[in-house]
Length: 598
Image (cartoon, rainbow, N blue to C red; front, side, top):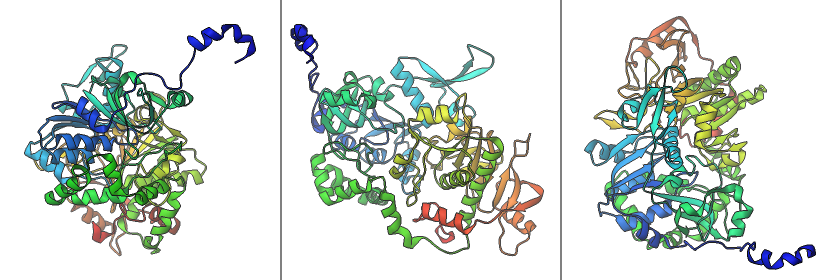
């Protein structure tokens, strides 16, 4: 202490002394926390930053398996956790923006589809942005918030009890308005916390912590490591959830597994990559009821706790995940897969579609001056990634955006997964969905083009990725509707397959009013200025077939009689460099499927 302050020493050391550990301890085991705070009938929120609270979800499963607790699951993405809860008879309702498989490629899950069709679970569909906005309104103690999303979608009609169009109180016209959403309890996985429950999170933050802040009964939080309060103060810029909102804090290293966790290394806490082999095995096993039951017994029910789960994984496996969490680990992954990368100069249809969609994005960015590209899932993702690099080569300043909070990232080869952890260190900004979708894509000063895929598309560019009523539940919107409602324009990619291009989609996940271009593997559709209907304007060469023959082939797969340009262009084929680029971005061909794999 400065000697000149000696006369205040009693007061300074008494009243103003700061202890390294502050507040009552809320440290519990996962078993204790779930037993104490999770009750049947709850609206249970599994909060997603870039990490899922999987270890806490596993403990909920152990305690409520086959007990019919009647949970409502609130989840930005209802994925693996929803499948386990459904199999255990634990869910009556899902409120989400996405329900299905995610890796290695997004798609429908037969378990969710069957449960929905059988009426065993109700699904309330929202979008990434509107789900987050509703949680924000709940945290702020508001009745709701305005939104630019949803209008023109079927979700706007289906959710009339929580979405309305109201007169603009400050101007003319109307605005969309969302009802606040508050869970009963939020399950969260963070980076570190002190014993009192002050939690640090490393970005990106996806939906952010609003659901936990607004939860009626607070949050149960797992973390990689418990630290002292002094460490929290030193890193307060990463604090997102103060102790007053936390009911219990549980130290669960690798608590996001099979997901990953990205954070700065401290003490015994390291980043670790997503366990893609584990996730793919889970996806394969849940296709068969007996195999799925056996998997759940082995990895959840027969594990007494998270420690047993980690022992099953084994120290060498965990060490491998830590190694894969290094920023340069993508090089090792690509090296292992390099033998799969074709050198064939001939492009397959999905490659032609990807590269041409990238060219269209490049052209639109140059013509319209777009400063950001929102990359969707699937082929549209690869197209956006390639377009980004082509624009940089042309010295056009454009930033890539992903809905979970990636901004200005430089995608690494080796894995085309949109939220691949290898891309996190390559971002210029790590933020959340409200910033990414709400401001960068659809804000007042936004200047963004969207690159999206579509499950179904109709002649007006309306997109369906949610539901074929009475037949199939697909996956939901994710951020697609948010982009379709608010981006400057949207370029869609979708293979030309039966029942994919229809006269009118049966469910409008996102309206087509901002869709300017649709690229398929056989041609390109565009909306001429002042027109609402798509016109066939370019064709992919098919051997020696004439343009007329190609047009007739396309017509045979469409659900409507298309308008055709007087003399459609031939689509320019990819260069060798462009083919190599997309092939090393997707060496496993998760998206660039060969014709025999379709």
